[in-house]
Image (cartoon, rainbow over the protein chains, first blue to last red):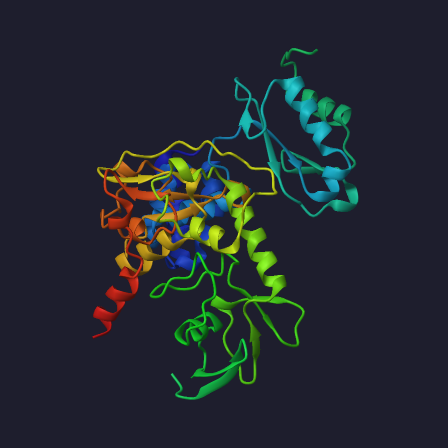
Length: 163
Length: 234
């Protein structure tokens, strides 16, 4: 993990590259999330002040796109696609199975911070519906069993209660 | 700006207005009323409430009059049976989206949504209501926001940004989760940019933003934007 001043420097450099242009807000928020892992109020305020934008506007943009995370994500992230095709193909069952299996609610992380479960709209992989993204990798034609097995593998010997 | 004018017909009346005028303004200036909840003289147009939908001859689509500029020879209908039906439905959707209970609302009798519902003859809501239960924010010294009554017209946001210049308010999230926020979704009382100018309460068409213990009839003053703009243009 980078030190705080180093991270701030990376962000500063990136904003300078964009000449603190307010129209580069999306790119800059992307970069901020890449550097910090998520967007907390402190970094949102820093971006707003650097670009001379109203904080409420920056917050509005950050919450409009489901890509941006305002809470720290767990070590591993699983994101269910709730687009139309995936929904019809039963992604909801997968979501519920993951919620039950790992005792985590969508939009939140497990108590030990090992796993986060997020929801997103269409990721554009409709032909492989239902799709689930696990740590940045798309799993097409997913089933509850496939997803849970993969997650158990990722979480290693981590014991979780099963029902 | 060019000085050329455009002639069009609205509800059978021939009207000549400067090029680039929006249909809503052309109609209003000529005594034809088109219902709207988000448009406000002096503010930019947002086209959000969809109540000013009109028909334009030659197109099966409906157009939001507040964001559709006039063009030469246009024939506009503002009050057909179809439009009345759509407007009734739109008002019902607005009512179903949050928790609108007139009897316990500060804006009762001074509410643009309520009077429009009455005018259109909306006597029931055919959609399932959401009955939202958002927390009321009364942390500000005298301004209160009850998001359960908000119709997301964005008048407060636009007046705060364009007239006051503070841009304290904005929208967060989207779809059914959209809400008006202050700064980084903070409580109003700790807002770093709010100037407590009350303009948001003055232009709010419903009872979502109001001044504590002040009769709404005294607070409401939606001509404020136009008034201030006119002073500045001098």
